[in-house]
Image (tube, rainbow, N blue to C red; front, top):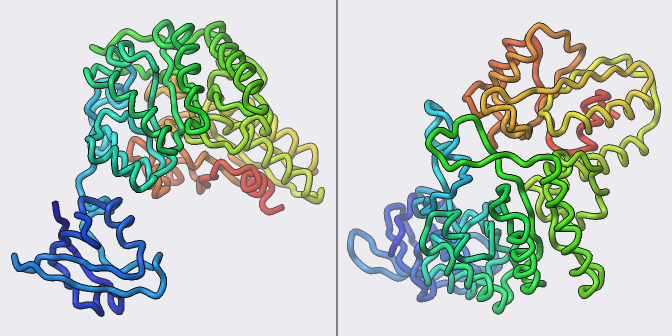
Length: 436
């Protein structure tokens, strides 16, 4: 395979060596270039020999760098230098299959790309990896790899993912472990399918691969109201959520006894909320390696907020703030707001619970609240001096919600500038108080 060079940065190593836009990069130091991982790995050297084709004519260029980690100044059409790999599975719990029609095209793309796991922390199922890609992860020692396991039962994994290769690729977990590749794993749990004894088995099998398996996140299946024609699934009850927590606690107790007090398995915050159980403290989550899976988000936010509040100097603020959030975070934000009001005289914080009418009330996380739900449930309110909304409700560019309503449209319709706030406790306190 080869990749077309789109542009060459001025005064870069590549420009000085004679490389030009339109050249086709074939190999670096004898290694054929397929995509960004090959390229980034191969250019980490002081001496480079690049083989290219210019209008069909093979050519060779040499680069000598003063710093082996320096970039050489080549840019390509896409950041992957290749097309994004789509998912080959038809998982019974797939959230993309539960999206309504008429949304932007990118929301319907199912990615299962190992390169995105390395670059952005995305989770992969391993079913889309060819032998070359498996060996490349080992040879380049790409670590950690984030893997959607769901179950360690090969037969059940095939049934859940509707892919005949879903079971046999589990052997690659052991292969990675044997070669020192660290893994963060996740189990999307469906009531009566891969929980109970199946969960116990999955935890046990993954635990055997410690320390290569760094963490295991258990996440409840997310169900929207758009499930016509899909597999019959239901949400967790309070009792079932509690059982999941108990099973994980049981595993951790046994695991930590034999591993110097270490624990690697964590229920997501949502399980604690469903079970109406107290969330663990921040210390429980160690390095917080599974935050993107909703594991320890509440504990970290509370810890950061209360630490910042304890360090803040009490003062008169005479300020009213409205915080809009999802159902899951509502009680915690009420608790934090009350603590802030007790310290700062004149501060009033009103927390508004936004029910997800767009996807259905079973969806309770802030990251899936649409612009229209914010508008419909906030319009006509007196927000006071500020309206704070969770930044996670917006896409990465922080400009649009899932339904394509922009932050500017939201602000205009509500008559106040809506301020997105990251999941950062100190920053949240600062926004509430108007500077600490």
